[in-house]
Length: 484
Image (cartoon, rainbow, N blue to C red):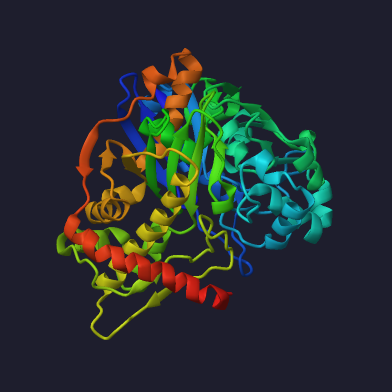
């Protein structure tokens, strides 16, 4: 049995996968609220939120299942900055991927490192880890001076589990401290932030073993002292789970954030359109990624504002009613935006509301707006080179057939909903755990899960969605200077 852990923004997911790659158990814990102590700030407490949620999720699994675990893999939200002192004590709440406070530090990095985009494959954006530490250097100098190590969210959990400072290539590529083509830390970029390799964890490929479960944690969880694989950032691990490991393979992830992911066998950056070029979680692979900061989280936000107890209630209504082009236009930029706008100050909006609109119309508009934003990102990926000609869907949003059909129609591509799609990163982490233990080839293990359903574009919907997408683009262009 292989255990995959995904430390997400809204929950921790744990899955047990057997030797036949069947998910035999899964559990989750949702003690994961985001704290926003000031405008553009987004933080979580690694100990009081992540670690407690990890323990709760694991102990929800059966004792028999836990005792059968042979190795563990980790996945998690990317870019978060966990700052530790020399005794591995957390110095401050973790600054998250959707935190926008470091825009001025991003500008400074772009100005002082002329070849930053060549080295890192990315523009400096507030979501990345490096500008967060530059912000601390400028605004919390005492805490910055005490920072001995900087870890990403899943890697802090590894520290608690194994007592080691380690990370994988895919997650670390999202720090903006890596030379992504060389799969190594960049001394030049680290130095600009006032840091060095000594402040960084050791680097491993995602399928390498990076530590062993500490005896006291093994006893607490009812496991042996099993090996722990390096793992991957949530999207790279999700790609491993979805079998997206060959050039031109791709998927859409509908999690808290939204992602369009394209696997590559080489380094293909397109920073001018805010496309991310990162290492994959497997050796010798890279990927391009378009990211929008609010996807399922935007739909959740609108569903709660319009009186639905749970987002699933909204999905049930929309799957039954299938409304199309009936609601207002929705801009989903509730936490700023990355691809293709790179605008941390972007804000959300409804445009075109009337007395005739019901709650479901606003929910449909939210799904439509998120889909348009994802399509903008896919266009940016295509501008950098070959792109997928079909995509899978993973993440919690994959449970809505209506949303999948909107996406297929907007992207003009067939979309596959696969077995285990809603727990993709955790499943991918379990696969990395297996590879680390057995040494099997990635191609023999990381095959695409069975297709449960294929959604094809709806020509009638496309004729209506095309003009609405143009309105969506125009609305952002004409209002971006008024956003704050």
